[in-house]
Image (spheres, rainbow, N blue to C red):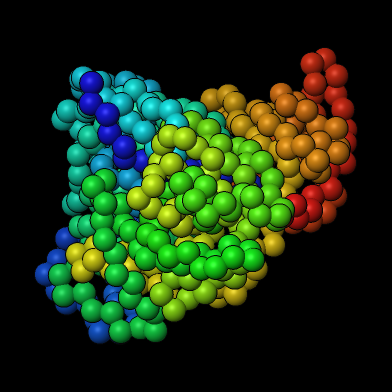
Length: 418
């Protein structure tokens, strides 16, 4: 059996925003191939693809072999087209062989190769690529509280110059041939590791420490800000310093749960940009993607979304344009609980972990409590994404939970913990 390490997808359940996907334009992706992009700060895209932001992950509608629309995650920490194995069986795809896949977390997933299947973006009918692997992604779907049917990554990205606009919630696909950028952003050189993930040079300054230079994966499949790999954390004794950290809860990836502490660093520097006081995951994993000694860490959505990004793999660069949110501080509150979704429509929300000495534990909430209402709004009308966004605002929230045969109402007072 072959073992592959493809995915650094990270689910962090202290999140996020939501958007509605509108219809795609009918213009073919290939209608402008070979033409030169306009020499302006915003070259004209061939096609614009709206996306949802689900627990800080970019989700786009995809079809496999003319299937119904499916929800795929756009992930620079992945290479090939991947489909959930349950969805592959539902669609009758041809599965063969076994393959072990690793990622964030120390476990591996047992998957299969896929033959004779291809995917295409809904509304972009003249472009398709093969689906290569089928993996069990149901655990990640439960943490999303949303369908998670597959992943697309660098094999797709390298066919275009892809503009990622978090503020407008769109991906803009530009023809890579003749693409010219002349805006105010900075071009950051990138390298690619053996899995096709983009690596950039960065510099992280721990609180009270000296700057540490290293290579980081730009990982848009991570819903977090900064994840520092365990060899770097250990070598620089980053968890031995007398700084506030909390146990990481509700954090995991393709390789299962991540063992880590959450805290802050003084600064992350990328090119000319200095990001002050970002939250950071200090990995304690002994295996998996976050135990990789050749890299300093991963840079995720909470930092990436401070920019408009141009992923120009053909020219081995990523262009960063500061967005209006660039100066916003990392001042989100925390609830101290991690939530998972159950049921075919993800309408049952259940607490699967509670952080000690946190708003959730102080309110008396327990693991396995089912959330029934929040501020008198039925949980079935909420989502993990909506709750994450809500609880990032400091305040008091009336929460009704079902515990066995009892119904209990408590007040949750969210606050910053780090």
